Image (cartoon, rainbow over all chains, first blue to last red; front, side, top):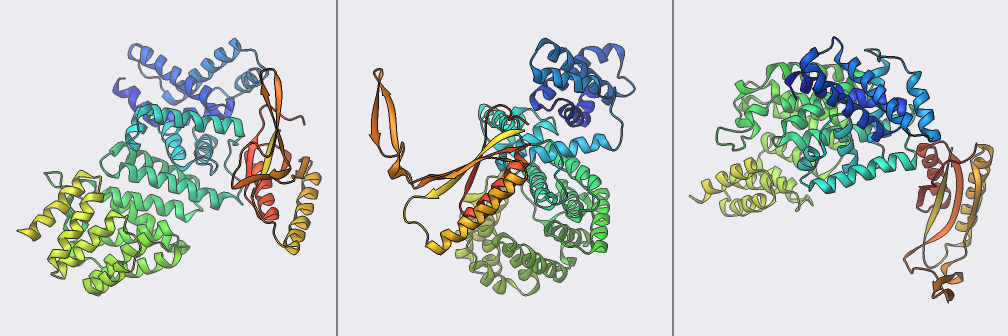
Amino acid sequence: MTMDIEAVFRAEYGRAVSVLVRFLGDIDLAEEAVQDAFTTAMLRWPETGVPPSPAGWIVTTARNRAIDRLRRESSRQARHAEAALLHAPDAPPEEGPVRDDRLRLVFTCCHPALALQARVALTLRLLGGLTTAQIARAFLVPEPTMAQRLVRAKAKIRNAGIPYRVPRDADLPDRLTGVLAVVYLIFNQGYEGREELCAEALRLGRLLAELMPDEPEATGLLALMLLVESRRDARRDDDGVLVPLPEQDRTCWDRDLIAEGQELVRRCLRRNQPGPYQIQAAIQAVHSDAPTGDATDWNQIRRLYDQLLDLAPSPVVALNRAVAVAETEGPRQALGLVDALDLDDYGVLHAVRADLLRRLGRDTEAVREYEAAIAFTESAAERAFLDRRRRELTR
Amino acid sequence: MKYYLLSVMQPVGGMPAPEVLEEIGKNLDVFHQELREADAWVFAGGLHGPESSTVLRPRDGDVLITDGPYAEGKEMLGGICLIKAPDLDAALEWGRKAALATTLPIEVRPFMGEADG
């Protein structure tokens, strides 16, 4: 694929599939038609050049491909679909309804009747244009397993009659929670080095925030992802070892992403309808405000975690709050909080406990906790960091 | 429109107290009435327990009759409700009402093909 076509593919695949799904009511047929259109583009564009409206060209070509295919079939369903396609406008308008098509598809992919992993995988596949192999790698499963999951999810959408629509207002808060969770999962999936997944999550996050300006949590999630993403380059040193946030070289942070994220956080604050994503974004905004790690306003962060724990209590949130307590009241208080948590199977707990014990000078126990944390982590960068800390204590 | 089967999943064993059952019965009547008024009603009914069931198995051109359910389990099919709905979201909404009325898990499953009207 030449760079031009690849760029068009990344930008337009999801949109084209969404439009075709609306016309056809069939995900597989829509995907095939759009893939056909891109294949044709690959053959033709190198000679004719990229058309003035590549997106329109792709949708029109896909639509004609779908009509050809439907004409060869003769079922009632095919005739209905063909009629719908023939009466559809030539090229989709650039604004408004086209965007709603994508949102419709996000909500279809993220239907609560589908398994959570299938929701993430389908969203990546249909909206992000990721190949089955890429998604399989992201989930660390064999490609045939992922292929089977995608087939099953698409079959369930078709057979169970999962509708292609943005749910009614009354269902929206419930459904949106799932959609935001899926987008955030995609982002986290990419956090350990899979840049393209983070980019896709950010794109979907922007789409949701733009399409649902009245949902502050959508804005909050986008802000959270932007602020976390801004530190990508600082998160590892030259040897690929994880650098914890307080020790990161802040000149490597992406100032544009920080400015955008902080502006969104301010917008959320003005609306004053706090939710878990908005608060997490605010916490990240406080971090990004500090010129040095030592200058971090931990009192503010601690207050935000108090609020988060109130709103969305979970042992993981309590653990993060304990980290802020360590900075404001000292490691001893924090250790008391961490010890009260029932999170033994969570590697981060061991890493936090190890750090607190180290700061309290309880080295032998700290080494044991570093070893426990190392056993849990799947990230090479994190393992290298924990191992370095552990060795510093045993020297 | 499609047909959806709502299956009531009931634990095997003792029945709830009579006053609880009476309450459930009332709630189910309301639910069924609502289905009729929405023109989503096809059929609904509760089943006798698995001890009342009989299984017929083909064998060498003949059919063998045995007492008892096809499979023993901790849960059983307690009753069914067959509805018409335009899509899964609508079917799930009925399923939600059924779960609240019966106080039991409900499995929603689509039939193949389309329902008339």
